[in-house]
Length: 241
Image 1 (cartoon, rainbow, N blue to C red):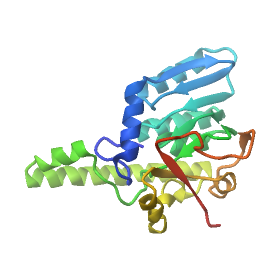
Image 2 (cartoon, rainbow, N blue to C red):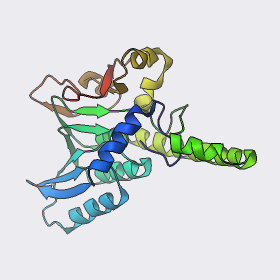
Image 3 (cartoon, one colour):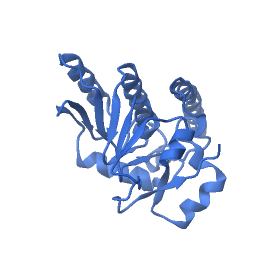
Image 4 (cartoon, rainbow, N blue to C red):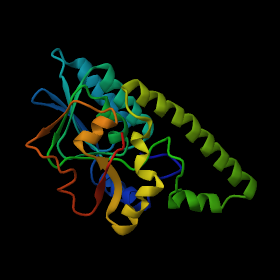
């Protein structure tokens, strides 16, 4: 998840990782073996290209295969809604993180994951605390006090409005409201302090179900989310009923 003026609740570890990934590749959208493919950061132009590709096909694909580190929440919600409206399945062989995990993965009719795929979360629009990124901190520090406070108030108002949209979207999917925020609770903070590689969280197959996300098939189980990641990790949270 990205916001024009803030990063998620975690330190800049995940933000830096996503930025490096985004710099290394541009988003690619294409059809392969009757599957729509979306590879790279969520992006308005990539979304438009995907929608146009689908509309141009006489035989409509039933599945979206995605590998994405996330992107702007607006584009994540738009892509997720489109997937839901078109009743598509979602396949993740490597990773679906941030806005991809928050909004696109749960929108699939059926979900297919490899046994090492990671559906990585690190907060959502409903999060109660955020850290400004370094660029925003510098911008705010250089502003006169009244202008600084006005900008902060504007950001907070935007967050509040967006969180209502997020909760309405999750409710429509039948997904628990805390799906995108559970890992931010105080009881889990020790997990991040104890292991600097941990930049977010995911769930087990059973706990995705408890969150309201069903119909997940694992290729060659058992599922060990993120087993192939080397520089970062996502802790697997236990969900209470």
